[in-house]
Length: 316
Image (cartoon, rainbow, N blue to C red; front, side, top):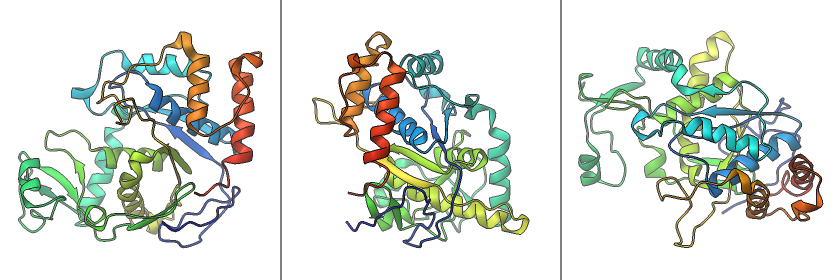
């Protein structure tokens, strides 16, 4: 994998190796879904995004991605917010909730539809899998009705390569990157790609720091972000692509990444110090024992300094 150096004070926004850097006020975010409490892996993502924002003297936002009710656990969102507070990860603005943004998503979908950039698809997962590893555009020219159909983007200008702060230049699998991905599901719920890009775009997010399991999704999201920019060019409201940084995953004893789907145990607030030390180690930070600090906030300040010294310019 090729690598390129990165200046910590600039934000490369080209998705294919272009250097379109410019100065921007840093705005980062942590966006958990309320499908369960935070576990050790999600704390690593939260801590990494928090430290990066603090190291850049920027804003750190929290967004609850509650657009998939069948997967949500009652009370999980409140538990997540209390977990963040117990671990000293305090956000800068009001918490935002994706469930309140349906009007925004509908507006973007309407704009895409008006430009002929999306279509209805009735293919099931089993049908798609029977034809290949990725969706093959089967319904693109069939003029399906909206009944029991998802909505897919016509992926005319796919992002095949992206630049990551710690992975360097990443080549994405072409078959997946060129797929006409879903914007709205067959059950009427909003798809992750449309919701997350719409919210990041509206919030002015400049930097996305999250787990490396989302590297492929980042390609789709840059594709959609660029499509939004094309729609906004006439009114001068296009926004630079966010800078990307994907963090290492936390692997459990069974060799699988820790996740809610894999039933990873929730982190306990009473063990906040131990949890933070483990998360810092997972991020590659070398720090004194947390008991050497007067408070969790003091430990996080030291972690921010260490991040600033070791992580802002690092490309593997």
